[in-house]
View 1: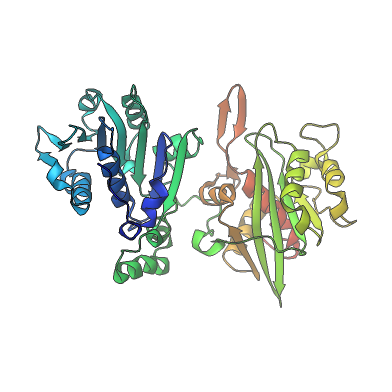
View 2 (view 1 turned 30 degrees about the vertical axis):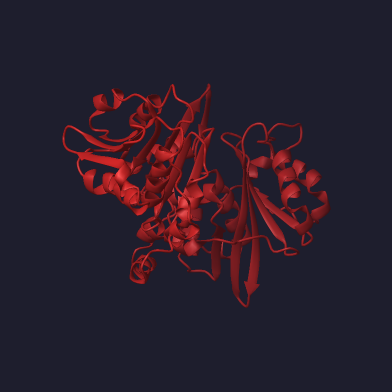
Amino acid sequence: MNIKINPLFFSKSFYKIYPLEERFVIHYGGAGSGKSVAHAQKEVIKLVEKGNKYHTLIVMKTGAGMRDAVFAEIERAIRSFKIDDFFKFYYSNDRREIVYLPTGAKFIFRGLDDPEKIKSIVGVRRIWGEEASSFTREDLLELNRRARGVPGVQISYTFNPISPKLAIKSLYIDNKVDNCAIVKSNYKDNRYLDKQYVEELERLHLFDPDQARIYAEGEFGVDRTGLEYHSQFSYEKHTAKGIHIIPGLPVYISFDQNVVPYITMLCFQVVKSGDKYQVRLFDEFCLSNPKNTTEAVCNELLLKYGDKLSGGISYYGDATGRHRDTRSIENDYSIVERVLRRYLNNNSCRVPRSNPPHNKRRPFINRLLAGMYPVELIINRDCVNTIEDLETVKEAPDGSMVKDKIRESGVSYESVGHCSDALHYFLCEHFKGFYNHTK
């Protein structure tokens, strides 16, 4: 059977996921985005397509409640296509299946709280995991092991991005797994929502920005402990979409020259209006091996923005870069001078002789974020590493940043804090008139 796809019948979320053929489809987003409806529709279409003889496994963390969740979602999709006469529906403690009578292919519903029943299932070509924010790493690995020995395997997961520490984010998104499609959606992808529901989602921005970020915008939430180094940072207030370079306006770049996990360069412009300044962080370059060198990161800047740098460049960064190099006989800032020479002038070097101490820089940065100076910081939401630093880096007892060490392949390195350091170097030096009066 082939189901005709009428464009008026489906949401944008459906069209985002329907053509995908990767082994893994990771679909996260906000409330009302139509994620579950879209995946139910896709799975029904795939089960009844001509030539399919394989089963589809649909899982949640627990078996309790599946009747009113994924089972009901699949049932609604079948009935909406007006093909329910071709199916037999079973839901009891002993049998949770929907059988497509012409071929015997089934939807099999299981909870991950009964792993032995998962392991006994064979002949599965497709898996859909709903509310995957509750899945553990072992859950995800076990499901991947279940889908084998048949052609065209696809495993899809849907969830709300309630925390940056979710196992599914760590395993698939952060690791940039091959053959994996990442999809994000929010209520704007679902034209079938009623007006009142949309208004309630948008109202979240007024009284609970953290909830608005997750359930309205579909962005990953933040685990807050009260020990954040950047206590005054607000995703709602300090980030925005569409922060691009303004051609011809001076560009300020700031470096943190650690090379593992990446070398960092942040790109700013400053727009002055009267006595007020708007600092626009329009891009970040976080280059890992083999491009984790000062020369490589400068060349990437030229490659991407070379025709928009007529206003000139000034550079800031880690003071220790004056005395060492990343992988060259030159020091880091000699490399910057050589590679970017055509855009520099005699005053382009803004690197201080020593880095700002944490006992002074932290109160300054937080006062700036709180609006106590006539300086507004706006960060392009594509600068994900910088935003992650500002949200997650913790304050150590001595007032410095907690930078947990990770050891991989014999190399020990700090996993976070590089972008925030580069941000600090720029703000403390560029606005040193305010910084110098910080106590």
